[in-house]
Image (cartoon, rainbow, N blue to C red; front, side):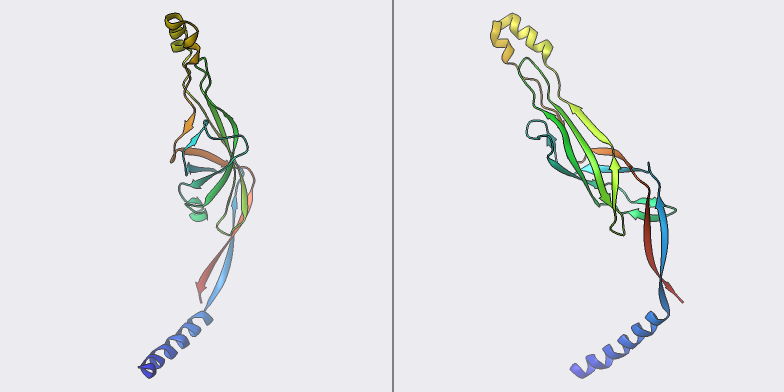
Length: 175
């Protein structure tokens, strides 16, 4: 059995070696311009009730980013971001507020690239309801809360590159 496998493996290795001798790596530089638009999605639900300013959050690239039909940022690449502002809903019908900031991702050649965009969300105000409750129930009406702001998992956000970046794409070319 071993002899049969050896008789098969050795010629395969020789063929692979020969084919590699007739192929060479070619590097192509592709420039991602500043302001290139891409789409990212949230990977979790973010709420003003639990988030605090400075908390790290992650997004994912929603679709391949291509320049001249060459993928420069792959779909599914992790995008780093932070909570830039989070205010819980409060008494008197005050709605919560939530702002997030996207910061960076990686190109296909593993270079970091800065991104810019922000997504904000404000919870529903319940001020009108609070006034009605105060009229009906007196001071107990002031206990009415507004809604917390929430950005659901899978929410798309338009993002832009915040710098020009040259990506080095390596391909094998048969000779």
